[in-house]
Length: 247
Image (tube, rainbow, N blue to C red; front, top):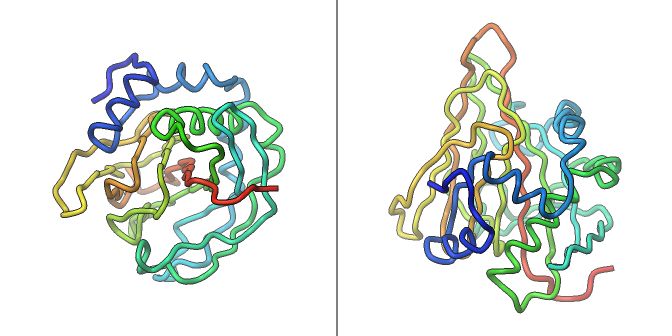
């Protein structure tokens, strides 16, 4: 486990060695703040209350809500939002949902103008740039996820199971858990060997993942109190090398 304080250099060394790192919020928040401000974090977190239902779930469930946007990022911190586009994965990486274009509602423009989302994006580009210094720009896909849990139907953060996303790197950032139990993140070698597990529980708890080297998954979530709403809100940022200049 990462200590309560950690430098980006030390974390980059850890990810280079093991393919992943868990960073508790107490250590992650100050790292994020070296790339900007989180002054509007509460308003940022509240935006998860306005996510539409993911209509592509194979089990026809209504437990996952999401918004999506694509950005072009430079390691130095320049952020360019790209025209809205579908999310696409090949069946090699996602046999459950791969092979089709999935059109999700866009992340609200107001988040681009705030503090928190640009700060997270600058951190992701800068941090993973340490691991791939030859990359001039990153193609970043950003997902707001809310997983809702009900007594009769646990929420599935990763209905496709343990998987890779088919990118270079992944940042999973906890935004808020409300009345939720479980949701354990597990990391695996390509042969299925367990490399560790942890629970993103507090705001800014984070997983840093080298997607080319390890697989990841999250166990279903259930309500702590069956009489109250229960949900798990995370921000997922995936990065892959840009192969051509983005507009």
